[in-house]
Length: 398
Image (tube, rainbow, N blue to C red; front, side, top):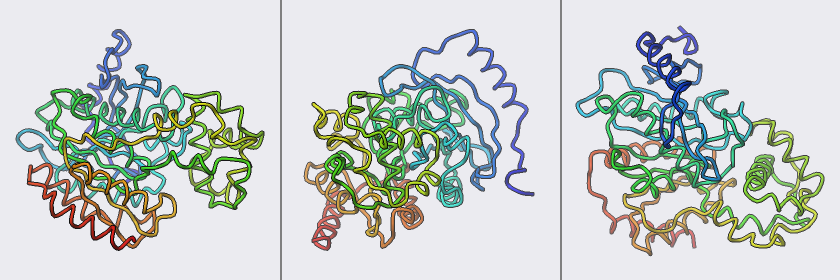
């Protein structure tokens, strides 16, 4: 039987979905994480180790902090839940696009086999996986690409909504955030916000992130008419998605865009990453601008607020993984970010692999799984040893 033809237990879930749908029609949910609806989910990209899958709709903030609707997928491992429920891995996906049809729950991951293989590692260990689409992807409103604060809250609220759906007897309050690329920044920020935003019902234990953009704001220095270098298509796609998101919170940046820049953003609002990258292969960043982005008054605080990842105040350990051949997210930026965390006394570990951006998930999967297993088991984290390892990584980078 093909994966697309698989059937999951449906009867009780369908009754739940109908009940939730009726409740949603008569009572307006008022809090982040409130469940709007849930229904069984079937698709070819469901990880092979998921015995059951559900699509949830829930309340979560948009980039302006207004309560909106989000969606996501809940994957459950085989067998009955252990005493205390299945521990939770909150998965934050990489760049898909900004159009509704680019949501992972709508059209699947950009690289379904790789992502499914990665998530299977956790499902095989008996962990539930919750995977937010991010607000505005597949739900009303526009998706603000790389707005890390809202994406982090979307992820945490997906954990809350999953608890509302399954109950504490099936899902453990213990959870970790795991993310890649765009989702690495979201998972990192989710870990930082977990203690305050997650509420007393959840027990955050740590974050594993791979290929994480930690200095995207410096991209502004190349966003000017003179940047005429031919770029890889993916880089041009990232820039178009980012500018589309920035326009939502700062429409004044439109005045430095060229007609071609506006047309490229309009194209980005229609196409997912693979298609958009192919169409923009060899284009330049400068073609999008009539004046430097840095000429917009107040642009640096704006970029920091929109893109900036937290640099102190983590309550639980982090593991950052990165490919030394990564051209999408420069390796050195993440090494320096990790070093800064260590210097400030934050609980951080770093691992590097001789791969490019796309290969980072497979290369880091074993280390990520070991880290998650240790965190969910409350094993000790050796900050001294990890700091010494990071120093060796820095020495090699020099």
